[in-house]
Amino acid sequence: MKKNIDRREFFKTAGTAAIVMGGLGAAAGCASKGGKKDLATSSANQTDGAEGMTYRINNGNGDKVSILGYGCMRWPMTKDEGGKDIIDQETTNRLVDYAIEHGVNYFDTSPVYLQGQSEKATGIALKRHPRESYFIATKLSNFSNYTRENSMEMYRKSFENLQTDYIDYYLLHSIGGGGVEAFNARYVDNGMIDFLMKEREAGRIRNLGFSFHGNRESFDEFLKLHEKYHWDFVQIQLNYVDWRHATGRNADAEYLQTELDKLGIQSVIMEPLLGGRLSKVPQHIADRLKERNPEGSVASWAFRFAGTPEGVLCVLSGMTYMEHLQDNIRTYSPLIPLNEEELAFLEETAGLMQKYPTIPCNDCKYCMPCPYGIDIPAILLHYNKCVNAGEVAKSIEDEGYRKARRAYLVSYDRAVPKLRQAARCIGCNTCKGHCPQNIDIPRELHRIDRYIDNLKKDQL
Image (cartoon, rainbow, N blue to C red; front, top):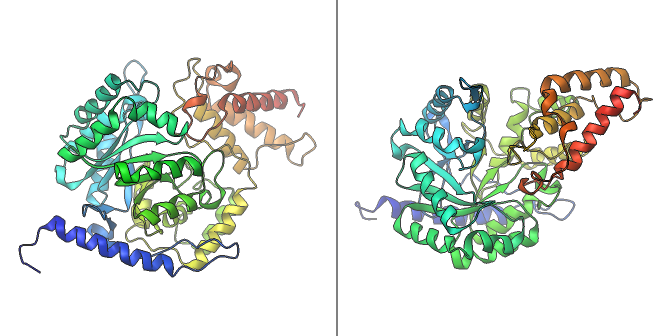
């Protein structure tokens, strides 16, 4: 090998080797009783760096990406002088500083996160560090207005907000809902996909991909476009419940990851905690996880699961609090992939989780703001919390009904101000089309409101 070999060419070679090794690892996977292939594991494309953080190599261009990525959809919030919710920039800066100091180098944001505030706050925090020390991911989030003019303005505004002249990982945001027809309207008919491909050729976009919520049929259609558009990466929802038990219109993550592996496309993982639900499991399930690994947190099981597939490039987590960031860094410094016995244990755990009828809200806040001031995520998450705590009674005859009744009513008023509660929903459906989990939000709000009304009247 020549001494002056180009660094990028070296990483391309290394990436190719990792793909080959990954294929061997997948081929060696055992079959489960149900005939499905077990989650493939490998350390072929993992390396340890600062403070022991695990990294994965981008097979396309050699990027050394931390397995833990920072999801910038849940920055800490505060109030301005007028009482408006704004991002707490000082605390955000501290979180970013700590993350980079401990090896995290992938930051994922969007023009629509946190009511449009995330990109700018992320840019401010990252600008204080050398540009080559981190990778920025953002998206073309043209959900409601996908004219070329608006889409171009959104694209260019991202560069301004993030204070950069190139974006490392650019995504077509949340395709799948509406299928190819919606994809064509948002990106093809207005010429945006052709424009973005030219931007990739020019180097202003280094990797082009998409984030996905939808069924198998839609996913297959978008993967067929790989020959035309060459997806550099794909962002999917993956966790140990959705692996084989996805709800709503979402395809099982096992299928999504397997299809990506076939094409050699690496994945970025979103919702490893299923909107936080896998860190706030019912107590007996938490006890089960802690008994198996007393030293690890409940959340660490989910993060190890998400990082175990060898085709995963990065796992995103929206870490609002320092303790969450520190816990996730510990889990991935280094990542210890799950073995077959542990994978079977989590599959059993996923089966237990299915017995708790929570609403699949991931607190993404795409449904907000509500034109009638309803705090939709707070209502749904409060309901889920009470389900997990056993504080949702089915009948007045239930043992512990009185305790559950009081607990729900008291905690509901504390969690959601009266003027923002479910009773104010008129069913306008403004929120419904924005939910990536395909939740019928008005129906759920009305159901919760009826439940609360029955509790108050003792008519359950």
